[in-house]
Amino acid sequence: MCGIVGYLGKKDALPLVVDGLKYLEYRGYDSAGVAVHTGSKIEIVKAVGKIQDLERKLKNPPKGRCAIGHTRWATHGRPSLENCHPHQSSSAKIALVHNGIIENYNVLRTQLQEEGVVFQSETDTEVLAQLIGKYYVDDLAEAVLQALREVEGTFAIAVMAQDKPSEIVAAKRAAPLCIGVGRDENFIGSDALAFIKHTNKVVYLKDNEAAVLTAKSVLVRNLRGKKVNPKTQTLSLDPASIEKGEYPHYMLKEIYEQPHAVQDTLDGRISPQNDEVIFRELEKHREYLSNINKVFIVACGTSWHAGLVAEYLLERYARLSVEVDYAAEFRYRYPVLDKKTLVLTISQSGETADTIAAIGEAQSLGAKVLSIVNVPSSTIARNSNMVIYTYAGREIGVASTKAFTTQLVVLSLLTVYLGLLRHTLPADQATVMLHDLKCVPIEISKIFTEVDNIKRIAKAFYRHSNALYLGRGVGFPIALEGALKLKEISYIHAEGYSAAEMKHGPIALIDENMPTVVLAFKGRRYEKILGNIMEVKARKGKLIAVASASNDDITRVANEVIRIPDATEGISAILAVVPLQILAYYIAVEKGCPVDQPRNLAKSVTVE
Ligand code: G6P
Image 1 (cartoon, helix red, strand yellow):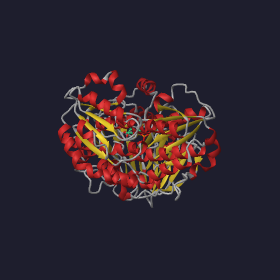
Image 2 (cartoon, protein in one colour):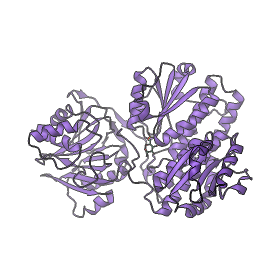
Image 3 (cartoon, helix red, strand yellow):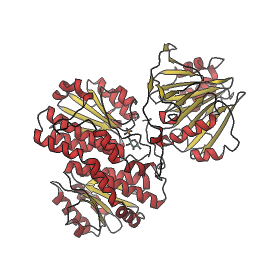
Image 4 (cartoon, helix red, strand yellow):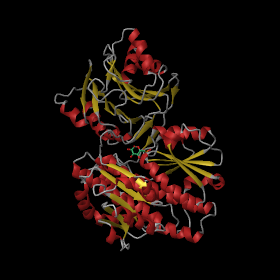
């Protein structure tokens, strides 16, 4: 949440910073601002709204070789010009951008007010700018460190001083921040996406570290002032992969990338004979994994839905007792864990604040943490005992699509891996499951032949203001995910339910104005689902069924049918989410919604 960018070098800094902000807009987009050091002073331009709104205000842009920028997701204070970053100290000597929450800001604000400071905004961030301003004499890094020692909470910051035209100080605690190391130029970003076009050499700052940047140097210290030797990594992220290309939205691009993303995630992980899952990353933990007796799955949002699917798979095939929890609940609920509990976290970004905190909590209680993560070098990847990467590639659309399907693929592989390790899954059954998993990329591609049908359905239904999504078994979490996609990007109220549970409440809502999307794929609950469909139909409900190709009887009962290829229940869950993503996408397009940047949402939730 909130994106930070910085540049120092020989080039005109502002265009580079604004361009970087565009790549970070997924982190927040209710206002944006930049501070440019012109050589003699700091000039600040801010705008409420998106980066485009900021660009409109930059007709006569300030010129300079040192600049910082920010795209905001409001926490303290509404989106307004006053609350927009960069914030300044009263003397205007200091300009600062911040991601995170200063938790003791009220105490600090009162102290500063008693000392005569007059605040211009409602934000927690301005407190930090004022505090640094108070301590600043001529050593910016020292003033930043001094201020940060008084601060409680989370922060990633970039700071400039009026009389230091060629220096930026950056620091972080529990919010992501990295430095792009170039030749005679250096960059700062909440995410390497901000500068990957210019350099792939990256230093990830650790918590409680601060860096002093000039065009030619990056000096890192911890908050006590002790020098630290930073580790520079070379990222393999292809800059072209973060462009939208021919697609109108990242979400659509990412939906269509799914066959490829799943293939990348599968590559090298299934033996040629389909008799073994190859997780080299788990090799040295085999003994531990064969002795676990419980799995606690912890995640947020769409990743939590992937966890719910895994609950069915792991219980059925690996015979493990599984509990699934939201990270924010898990971390505060006094969970019962021990050395035989595996905590499995799932995260696309690897930066979700609650999931990071849940990992710390689990480890402090003696459990080991295995994380399924999409972004390499993320905090979750670094903090976990074991990591399995999904290879979805960068996901930029706020609504998660390809990250989810690749998570489901990894979780299916993990199920087979643990089932074989624990001797709960017969070898011949494992072989069939692995063979089926290898077919997922091609089976997803077949679903794209349904796009015109789905577009037509979207046109027919986009005016509704409510929808119900029903499924059973692994179809239940897919129903939750389908409803979430619709809510997120089209602002239509949608509820996902276990189809059986419908009779305990939601059925009261059903009439001709409440469309129901039902997951009716093959499996041992299919007949029961048909029964639920009849119950909806009897109450004049309109039905959109996502059904397996050979389920002929469905056409008699559903108003609309979207086909997915015939497959086992587990594979059908992976396939069935794709048409739900496409349906949500075209409904949002029909409604004219900003698909990639839905209001109030951020891709990476870095505050609790
Ligand atoms: C936000 C995003 C979701 C995502 C969730 C968890 O809410 O908008 O798409 O599923 O965070 O994020 P993570 O990166 O931990 O999977």
